[in-house]
Amino acid sequence: MDRFLFLTLDGVSTGAVYAAFALALVLIWRAARLVNFAQGAMAVATAYVGYAVVSATGSYWLGLGAAVLAGLALGALVERVLMRFVGHANPLGDVIVALGLVLLIQAVLGMVFGNEYRPTAVPFDTDALTVGGIAAMSPYDLWVLGAVVVVVALLALLFTRTSLGLRMRASAFAPEVSRLLGVQVSRMLTVGWALAAAVGALAGMLVVPTGLGLHPHAMDLVFVIAFTAAVVGGLDSPAGAVVGGLLVGLILSYVTGYLGPDTTPLAVLVLLLAVLLVRPGGLFSGPRARHV
Amino acid sequence: MTAILEVDELSSGYGPVPVLRDVTFEVPTGTVTAILGANGAGKTTLLRTLSGLLRPTTGRVRFDGEDLRGVPVERLVRRGLAHVPEGRGVVAELTVEENLRLGGLWRRDRADARRAQDEVYQLFDPLARRRRHAGHQLSGGERQMLALGRALIARPRLLLLDEPSLGLAPRVSGQIMTLLRQLCDGSGLTVLLVEQNVRSALGIADQGVVMSLGRVVMATPAAQLRDDEQLRHAYLGF
Ligand SMILES: Nc1ncnc2c1ncn2[C@@H]1O[C@H](COP(=O)(O)OP(=O)(O)O)[C@@H](O)[C@H]1O
Ligand SMILES: [Mg+2]
Image 1: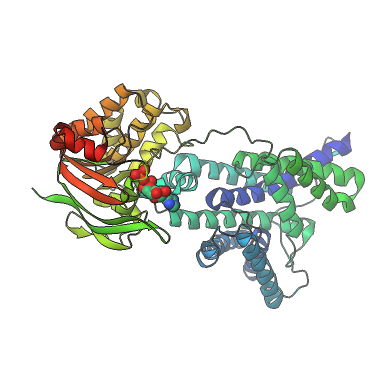
Image 2: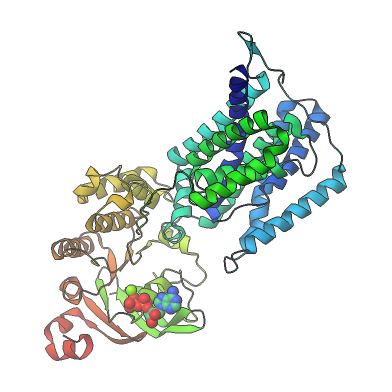
């Protein structure tokens, strides 16, 4: 029972990171109707920036801020100089460009920082606190969970309460009508990418120190897991991404805990296939009315 | 009388396929001009070219005396030109309130944008009662009210309307026509109205422009089209 509780709590805190990362995928899907397969590599790149700043200044918080800023800049850059020019004529066009970007980023990171593991830092203790004799979450897990909750809340506020959020939603749902109403739709697309990459950067900073280590391929598996989470939730639904992230985090925690860590990648693939076969629109897809 | 819109030898189309050919006409300030013509005549294509969604291959459009060539779509509403597209363009996923707010986001004068929104709610009572409903929950008539009201929040000088009465009950579409006439007479708005429903359009129009196969075949006072049976028969088929 103790073990089950431990695995549950562990699943929630890793699931929170998957949720954030899945949210970043959903943001871009909603804005541009494409899955950003370079999200993992972009997050690693920004994590390198973040931890380089941590090493240079000795401050985790400065590094975290730098990573998020780097995410904003990288997201905007990728949209402006690359994705903008990939038409939808070829349905695989954006996938191929994104995979090319992955190779480019990983090669550049290898050249600049080397391919061996780089040091990371954590702001809080990673040893689990024991509550009533049971190993529960570590202070670091609590920080991860809190950070993700705050980001999700801020995004929800942005989209539902601000005029920027309204512009972004309208641009995604009805670009032509939005332009007729004076919304600068192409700018909203850039903002969407910037925001998504910043959320990805935060998720990268949170997850890299937890057993992954900082190297150019650090987020490869995390990307696949987060993609699964986003598909579970339905690529269109931010709330679905959060629930999907937590759900996948829990499932993987149980699988890893009871069957051993070697089974994790297999479990992810089985889960992804199962969702794609049974409910390709995601668990939260409904008969959504879309008459204009 | 000055013309708020001058269309001069305008041609455009989709890719290499030409649709509009040398379209020329004027819209006098403060009037209602009805664009009439059979399905596929190019009426929607004309409006889309006027508002910049399609780029003309040749010819030009002057709005208020200024050439619109190269002006981005999202700038036109700031200049006073609003386009309610075919199918109305209500954003189905947004609420009534959000749709209306969206129409005024570009405005610097926040107070007046809010005032305009209140005016829309007064004008269209059903919308005021459904502020929190999503666009896809509205009836056809309510959607038309929302699309029209949203355009009015920009306080446009020229309003392009693409088949506003499509799919509406005759009573509702009659109300909308009456309202358009009132807006023109009361606030100096100019309306360019595309309609399949020729009778109701001619009922409020000052001028009728008849299109066929991408060309303007006649531009004449609406009264003449209303009254001259032979003319109506020849150009409009009834
Ligand atoms: N998106 C499009 N691509 C190619 N041809 C189109 C497109 N939209 C309309 N057309 C063609 O342009 C012509 C005029 O259409 P349209 O402007 O919609 O006419 P109307 O609004 O008068 O019914 C028609 O022949 C139609 O087939
Ligand atoms: Mg049409």
